Length: 283
Image (tube, rainbow, N blue to C red):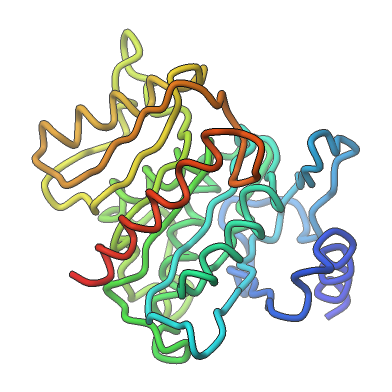
């Protein structure tokens, strides 16, 4: 209980605008798989450049739940994976702000605090567990289990791609009833994804197994993004596998812009993604 109170206090320090409509759920009721450090609240780094709150040292992965107003709910949900190079989490820019945008569209949003720094295996376990927890409580939140997707930015886009292509494998031993549910996302949104081209000669990262049952994907990136090849190789793999996808490459915007105004790419992708998401939930 003490750690829960501390975490809420820390969250409140930089998310006062969101405090009244969010709830924190911890993913692992007991020991976190592969984690040797005692659970403790994440650390806020001293780097606040760009008005971005950066979390690191995540040992107790969690979901922050944002539910839309009752009159806006569409019965769908999105697991939101912030980026940060698998080193930090840009928790406001690519987490809470995205959740509120999704709420406005009618989606329930679940912002994932996955393990950082430098724990890609743990991050995948956290994402898989998060999707199963959401599925297991879909009825409680009035969600359609088939309309629960994932959305990620930068490293979070990498994580979203990984859970969308590796869902058939159990990445941890079951801990409770939630782990009997599927971890396959109903759809995936990758915004300026990174690390998808770690194969030979910058080809598709080998762990990403694309096939015709891969969830539909929306991909957005810019030509001047240093990680831009990630979108190209992913789109090529999806096309070859005859898996549905929509790809947008814009000229400028660079990387890490979220949906804040002032960057042309940040103003372009939200309406495109919103239109695509609407199609997914009407299928």
